[in-house]
Length: 177
Image (cartoon, rainbow, N blue to C red; front, side):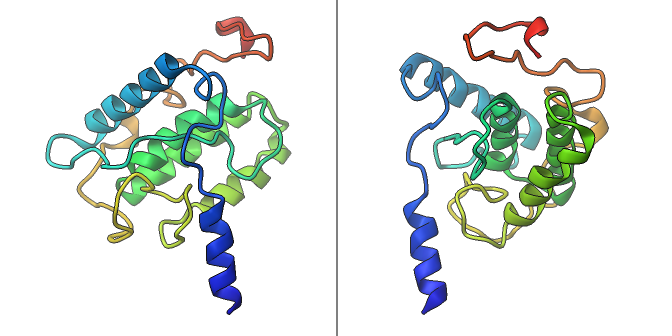
């Protein structure tokens, strides 16, 4: 009975729309983010593995109250929505850890990153699990998807610029990291 109640509570907390500004109030920004997520997923997974059928939705840092590193989490959400191989998941989590390190002391990054590794496992039927854009939970990992982590481009990739960060005032740019 406890398991049923827990599943109902978690399912009731599943976002059905973006919960991060500016995507909550700006349909153009939301559509651009969704298109960027689809393009990035298609580029990573290749033509043999389709883009997830569910529309990309981000909630920023799931279950975390500090919103100052939402940009890191939005980029990570794109990777988790797309899904892929276990290597892809490890690379996405490593990129998140590097991005968090820009905002947090090194010793503090273990908390949110451990939560992501454990709570985001594809075995859990939660809205932030690995591959949450797919209709099916199985298989958990797609061994044929993705590329080697060294071939990645985008936020968190070695030598690649991170996403433009928004400050609380809404400004963007490299000086706002």
